[in-house]
Length: 345
Image 1 (spheres, rainbow, N blue to C red):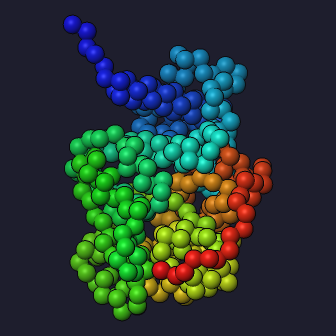
Image 2 (image 1 turned 120 degrees about the horizontal axis):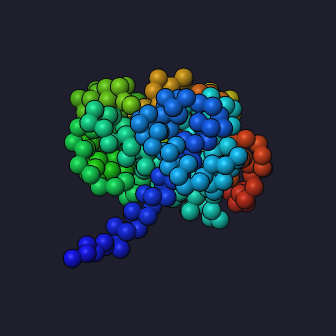
Image 3 (image 1 turned 135 degrees about the vertical axis):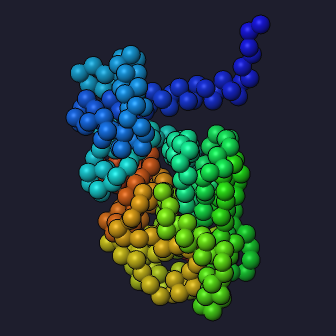
């Protein structure tokens, strides 16, 4: 009797097949057009050398390569190479853009989910640190369920406001449960009410364990927030209006895990940073430190983060990639200026 494939399984299989063709196109481009050795291609794509051989063979079988790359990702793959060169990235993936921001965010989240799945396939334990941004929340629903108890997920930032209200973007527990991995959340405010409170929390064994895991992590991944009167860090209640204004006065253009930086990528100090519990990005990074983000409003922040060497990996969409390379106005499609009307948390 023929086996009946459930509709959901069929859709997932088709998605995986398309993803494999995308990876084959990237491998073929790097090998044939850029002249990389197979071991170099493997490092660039974060796959094994044996997998590279299979991907290059698949590209040939599917007629993706003639005298030029004919796959639909050709322009995205070229952008990846230019971004790697421009910002000194060790990994870059550009997904095709769609008409709306929500769709682009979903595409970036899907690419990140596949990247994480690939890391989880091996039996050698890996540790992944994740920040709590919207794209990270989508990833938790996109990763294929599996049982990988040898791996670890650790939160890079707290999961509540200083008054105890939970964050909508606390993703680490759901993601770890989905893949059967160990989970180390950070159950504390992103910004505490006092320096003393922060010091007490960071003396707890749970925080010290998380800090040790972050220090030895194989991958750190986060989004980037823009800094403006309607900054997500303020809108989500982690900082109050006066703290936001101080950062804007100090020249902040973006933030990673609540740590603000200026247009040169220099990390700022003072203000809420004295009570910030999240782990600070290192410059330069000691491991793969990834930004997964999309959207014109975040272009100056992403560019500054790479300029300050706060990260060395990127997953984004094609339109954002072109804006990062100054090929189109970074402000295109932005909403009108925002004026304060809300009260502080």
